[in-house]
Length: 229
Image (spheres, rainbow, N blue to C red):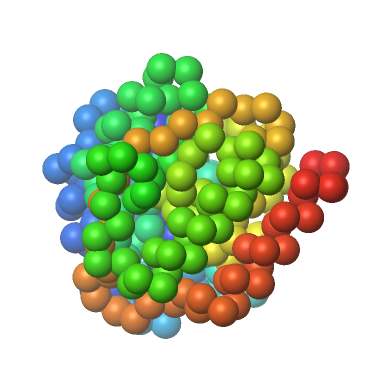
């Protein structure tokens, strides 16, 4: 299997089927789709089960416990069979046309390729202005502190070689997994790249991101500048 698309889904019954359809229309090459139902309380589990009856689509049901986007991504990535892994959010905010560009960049020799909303040719779309300022500003600080060569480490939408995931211990069970993974990969000497993408606010459902909470979590990651990983 060349690459696996891992999709965390918590109460995404208004998005998940359309997202899978978007991926089918957009993606080329040999791949699988792994849906990770993160203890949803709506119809997400049932929809995932129906979708998993199709070829190369599987579903993981996570029960009550250590729930969160980060934990769901970790479980899905462990399950994945692909040499490359691509993380795509279940709210349809990611431009699925970008997936093939990410895979091409990995083929060129990069170890992690992030879908960037802030590089040349990209667009933060209808992302709220305060979130855009914060996430781009945070990445700027990370670039200065860690020498990271990309412009959007807070975006979970990315691809990477599975060996990178296997070599790094990820601790964040929430949205902070995105910058944590990029920072640790950079510190380990992996080659990071980026491709331009466009962000779109979720199509259905309620957002689950708290800017204040994540600000604290993101800033705490700067401790890795002084801590051995």
